[in-house]
Image (cartoon, rainbow over all chains, first blue to last red; front, side, top):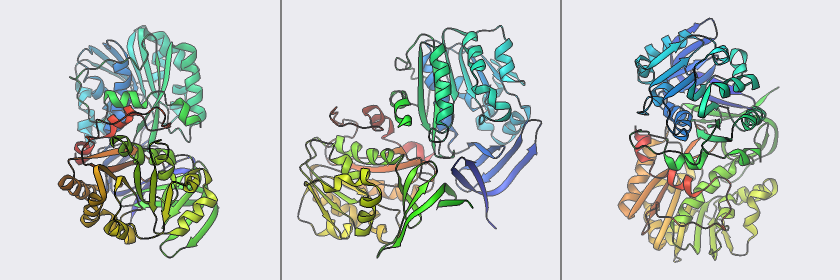
Length: 269
Length: 269
């Protein structure tokens, strides 16, 4: 018998051959699965959608985090919405000036499962500079009195409880809680399939921020392989980003930063 | 009824939803199909493997062609092995110093079908500077007396008649027919699946050329989305490439050139 995990988005499916289902549960929010695949090691699957694989998670996490972190002139306080696997937080802590990270994940079970099955991804969740909250990210940004330098939105697909993370109201709140040099960045899905969503988010950012950009990354285990991120910046143009050789990366580089930003023209073709 | 095209490599499958099968034939060499997909327009499929889609073919063709073309100090004579759709030749002719291109495609039917269904990709095949030969590329490089500045290998997967395009003997021949600043470049498949093939080709290039590199591109309709190219250069380090603003590209940029070369360390991890 062959087992295949089919991760389907509109009109395109990415499938990974599964050697073993290591974990499967239904939490209060979603179905959480961990499968062992033939080529990509262990893979985290939420509601049937691949979130990360051991082999290629660096492609996603490094690009989500370092483009906005290097755009901010001195990111000390960082908010991560979602990102229950801990990969985004791990990348944030590579920046030596970071003093405090708040991570707001709605589903504690995702964190528990990732601590068990993906220790190399989730290890930074034990950092004493991290405050880990299990609550709704939309509610958090609406109500918090705290201010942040960088806000990263590492969400699942824009359905169900994650839908509000792509709303105008949410980005209004994010803008409000960002400091004067504040930068925010959200994953905004596959450009060939989710063009309308991307356009909407880009418009929200354009209305709020002095600078906005769409940039791309390759994520080999996501359907289509090509993924986008939407970034808003209050004072610094993302092309005028910092360099810091102390931040060790495998995928992100200053060259790649310059190469992938301002992607908006191409995906509209 | 839903029709899906499943493009399967070892342990990973990329599937596109098909609205209509526009063409299907068996040539002397392979099955040739053109399908209309929901998200990527028309797609060329050879022996079941996606070769190009209207929507994203620039990602593949620009990266295959411009990294080696800009590495060569003045590419005037170019050989393309395979590439029956004409996309590689179209990109080569963007370089104004090109005087002569020889394209050696084993299967005339691929060219005929692409002229009919992909006129925007195949249009450059009518350029008077192009000599189009329908024969075995391995035999051509073994026997030709002509010398080239750049040799591009735009092949199908390394099976059957295309297998020899990844052999030591083939690269020996390519080296022999390259001029003193000669550069060659081959598509070398998905790094997660075909690591052994990539390692072998990189070794061949390392034995022959002063410089060799592995670089990556994102090709959204190929399984895994991440693709590799193997480049050998007789005199110029691929990091010391030319710029030429007359060459208009949508995906390739000098920043991306710098970002994607020297990928070898990462894919071995």
